[in-house]
Length: 555
Length: 83
Ligand SMILES: Cc1cc2nc3c(=O)[nH]c(=O)nc-3n(C[C@H](O)[C@H](O)[C@H](O)COP(=O)(O)OP(=O)(O)OC[C@H]3O[C@@H](n4cnc5c(N)ncnc54)[C@H](O)[C@@H]3O)c2cc1C
Image (cartoon, rainbow over all chains, first blue to last red):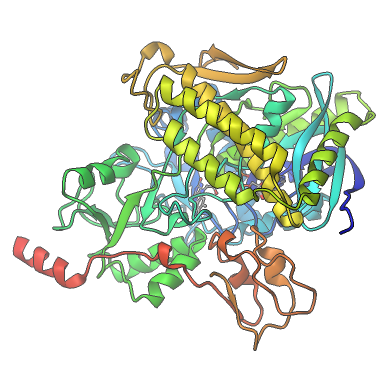
């Protein structure tokens, strides 16, 4: 058999966006508007990639015409909500204050942000509290954002996944990409790099079906590449140890819960939560926003399962719910319901938590300008959880700053780090030419087992130490033995190597956080320690993991 | 094994191959019927179905993902007895 070798291609640009999801496309468009030469390197195809591939429908925002001129009550509400603990008030305020501008842009570009000419608020809210998520029709968002970026002169390179950042004395100077369809390395030289690779999925078993690996809540091709690259390059990551999980229909994970208008009821039809008794598109049932363990608790106490019951929803409201589900990218689910003759008004749908699939809400620490702790490196979107609105707003801001940096940094595109490129090339060629060894899937499943058992729902020092030792063994075996029979599998192998790095960071950070907080449950430290209401930073120094506690107000 | 391509009507335009983020159609050739090489990597996002100009791609939802529900008869009985 002839030996496979990797060809090389060099691409030079001012601003490189790694990942053309919501944040990446917004960043690219803005940087190009600001006069930069911009390239997007995208693992898939930006028209249908990432978690927003075929739509989303809730956009977090502050709209003065509706909320009034004072943003502070909405900042307060935000801080009580899902992501409040990761961000300081100033960051949240900026996010909210810039959201209206993005809503107007999107509406102008052809993503309908209003319904019948007006803003419609829905979901993620408790009756009586201020509402700050509008419904929007996002099903064509990726095609529209791609078109906009191209119009502004952005170069989009699809089917190239970046795997390593190039650095020169703590300054990021580019990245190495790997073509997912042919044996080719793409070397990017850039003055500024924006990481926007989305979330870190496939670390843990799939949401509700451990044996069905790609049945995940968020995109299963967003696997923490950005976090792993940033970490290896020396950037700071934050709160990697505090996980989240979601809930939704058993067992169609991508469908989620936010757009369902029904009431969650027990088998006898009694509402399980205190907030709603009638179905509505406005609230759905917010009980799970406050109490995710309800499904497990019902199960343990002999009262399960819990059902999403849309009985009583008017025809008009039902049609509206279907419309939002369609725009949320859930046509696959709707077709399935229709084929199986499941009308959730007649047949309450079993809901459950997707508790196997923990994913870190934490990630690359970026500030209000999208800047990270490394010069020339920016990040946006789900690199540190923010949903669609966070991705759009901070993508936009990061694009602006990155263009500014590229213009003013005074640096010319330097020589490339040959050692880094050659090392990666050697490893890749070894994977492509080995004939016996584990494939990526074996390594990924093994990682998921180790993660779930040692840093899953329950954690302790002894479990975490055992997990770390196991993970290190797996890492060594994977680095030395993985085989990839084609470029597609090579991409999956590289994904797993990144996941192993991200998994290790979670184990280390989870050991350091000696308390219980949210879903970071330490059986050896069973309470929430007010003194640890802080950010836990993790970064690499002299080849070692370093952790550092910082106040949430640190910028 | 999602997705499923209707070989009678597929015109080999490659739209599904371009759209799929997981690249389940990996290895499909230009102007030939799309092949499903990595069915287990489907995320059921429906992009392939939505772009097909001849409605030749359908998702077949795998059994482990089957949506479960409560039979109406049981519920109606419970509901009416509560009323
Ligand atoms: C069905 C569904 C419904 C949702 N609904 C909502 C909602 O209503 N409201 C809300 O706020 N949020 C919602 N979300 C979450 C929302 O989609 C994400 O928060 C959002 O897409 C994040 O944007 P992002 O740009 O950070 O990441 P993504 O949009 O996921 O984009 C990441 C991009 O990076 C690419 N990529 C990954 N790794 C690499 C690499 N190594 N090299 C190059 N490219 C790479 C990916 O292919 C992808 O294009 C929903 C998610 C799903 C799945």
